[in-house]
Length: 337
Ligand SMILES: Nc1ncnc2c1ncn2[C@@H]1O[C@H](COP(=O)(O)OP(=O)(O)OP(=O)(O)O)[C@@H](O)[C@H]1O
Ligand code: SF4
Ligand SMILES: [Mg+2]
Image 1 (tube, rainbow, N blue to C red):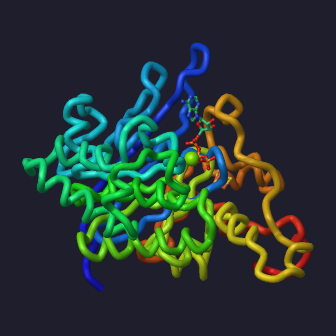
Image 2 (spheres, rainbow, N blue to C red; image 1 turned 30 degrees about the vertical axis):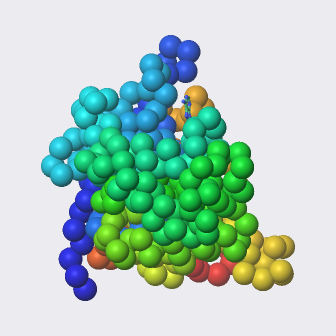
């Protein structure tokens, strides 16, 4: 096994949003690394902080009501302390990003070609003709059949799949070392979804980029991820290689998440999942473990006051200890897990 080469290292990251006069942590002490040539998948229910993590990395959170504290190390520098001007040099050049909704991320009034070219104007010294050629090559690379024509079109003239391909072309135009993809295929049908993911992986083989892939879809995770981080309510509860996570999930929340995908029709009737949902920000516990409320049958003394990540096997980290004596409610008095 080759040694992992860290590209992006996130240490003790806290991102909070102001609601009325109080700041609430949407990201609560997250520690993660994105390595060269890997796909680190981030999974977790809606509202658990996946997009907030992505926007924190590139400094694209709503202005005025957001506080980011901690370290996001890229080439030994902390992006959290970067000025807007310095972040602009990194965004698109070193770190490319693809967001869930390409229609709102693309400028409706600007031709596709010009939008792809923007990054090249900003980050490279290419001449106009060279840039045009590169735009066409990029469109071709992301599987767009008539690049010259599409370059002259506007976003609303393209299908959802085409727009997402354009977003990818923009994200990879400057060959970034890190690509952040927030639900890049959620809005697309299954065939196009597979094509877009294949495309990302092909590009990765060329550049050895590290990809942070945010997705709801555990099928996608199984197919493309190298490692997986499971998030619950702004906290990472488990990190492992994809094989380890699927074959040996430990944290009750991970197990519940995996159980929520029925393997067969019959499973629908007897899924063992943890009931409830991620609390909204203002309802999150401000101290202690945010997950404890989801498993009320665990005795108070079994919770850790300050839950930590523990390495339970090489590279497999689980938060706290409740995985050791956790049973799904349906299994109580039933079989041992
Ligand atoms: N700008 C904001 N102001 C206040 N609260 C916010 C803001 N952005 C996100 N939140 C809250 O932060 C929490 C995390 O939201 P986030 O969008 O990161 O979740 P997510 O995991 O990406 O969800 P989804 O799977 O639905 O995309 C949620 O409770 C959300 O309501
Ligand atoms: S045992 Fe630990 S991780 Fe599990 S619910 Fe309690 S405090 Fe949270
Ligand atoms: Mg999101």
